[in-house]
Length: 252
Image (cartoon, rainbow, N blue to C red; front, side):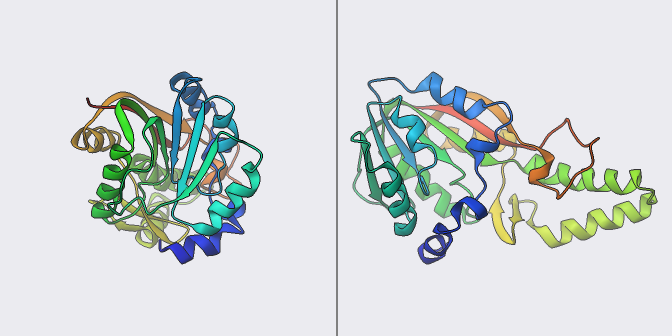
């Protein structure tokens, strides 16, 4: 998305942009951050948006650098954290090659590698690496391609349980997939009509290995099916939809 589109979304950010931190069923992200962020650490939230995670991290880390492309989003982040003397707000285009702006011990890259263009994602990873010290940890959250496909099977299951034939259920699954899937080979599926990069679990590992990181931990952040369907039936529970969470270490 262009900067002006993110700026326009800033005022309705909480209504329009999914809150991973708030909807994490098992608090996996919170527990992970608590385990990797130390009291003497400099922490960088790469792509912080309106700064949802900043208050939580500011209570743990020595210094927090919150970076985003959108000036309007950063204005909200600054307003909400003006009283915190260990928080620095910076505007940066992470996809562009610019001088380093910090040397973080721990970084967070949450729902940032979602652009369909692989060159943009590569540019972002290069920027993150240049602003993270050698041996530093990076926590990344990305959409799951497995879940994008699982959702269509859940839809078919729903139709079958409501009395539809196999043919009718399959037709509804195909119709939904035809509307959403931009490129299954590239993992690009629409979220709210926006083409969004989704990742296979193995692809997450390969992507960060190629970028010079050592994968330490790959986990699921699970959400309710209410995040994918309006008023899902009571039987629709486990397996729940999930995003991938990766903890990686920058190579020396």
